[in-house]
Length: 311
Image (cartoon, rainbow, N blue to C red; front, side, top):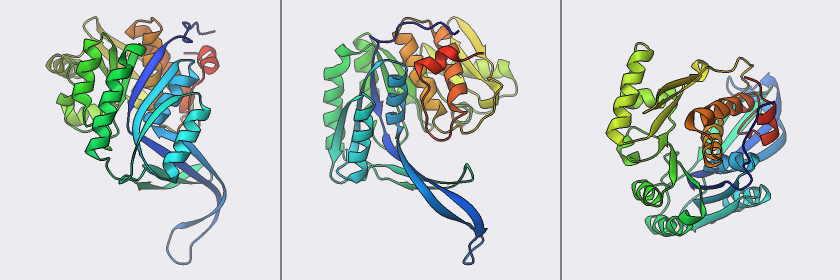
């Protein structure tokens, strides 16, 4: 049995881009006569919180007390998202922007495989984001760890100020980065890029020694306490002042990697907020990721599943 800390009083504040993940599940038995594409006869539909909302759901599944700040449209998808989050026991402050369409990712699944994804999105209005910054500042005192979940949808226009405010308040700040401008994340406690995201910023490496040099250089430039690079089948590696720590990928069938990064940063935050070291928190995040990649779609790892997980 995997021994875990008490997470029931750990308070996580999450800010970022939320979205609604819609799934259409169906059977594929023929090719369309109109074009060389499969015809999916939809048999059931499902909705799940995505993006920063999936991070929040993962934190809640691990027993933490969760607050989520984000921006949604004044539309049916935004209302559905609020309802789904409310039923997960997550405290939400979803600022509405009448000019915004809530981001929706529609996935069509046939024979347990994703056949197509359709995205509906635009960017939030500046005034709504400014209101969210004030909301963020007022909630800092009531949290242990801050997660900034950047999906590049415009919901974190004030991320540099948020990091400064949180660090000044003595809070650990974990950032799931996006894009190639990592300067905006300077001063965070930890960044959690995946392998391809880190490569886009730091360039290619020929071996682990060169990867470590690139990671430590970026960590120094951005004044980060740590950098955790998730490396798919190669596991995950933590770079900090204490040195380099590696966790190998868990040997199990990978069903779906969508949302695995959300689970990693959520587990890190909850475990750090519950008193574990970065190295111990990474070990638990690796176990949790191994659980969720065995599930279809954006999923969570519960406290019970994590306790039962075997390295």
